[in-house]
Length: 81
Image 1: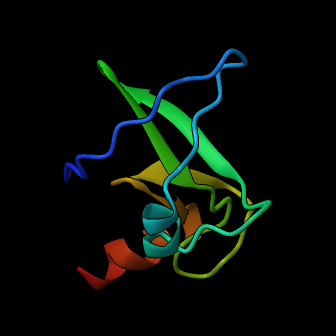
Image 2: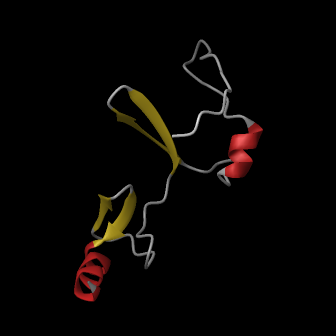
């Protein structure tokens, strides 16, 4: 993980503002879905991509190596190696 040196306070409703520089870097637009999950003692925000990174199929997708991959593409990858 890369430190940005940017600090934001949580408001009364539990909200934070994502800095414009980070939104541009991560191509996050208004109304984009953001996934929130934890990793040990960290809160991780990621742009939500519900479909497979290879074929864009949203059926039978699992989280593998930090990416969403469908079982069909995993089988194809296994066959190649």
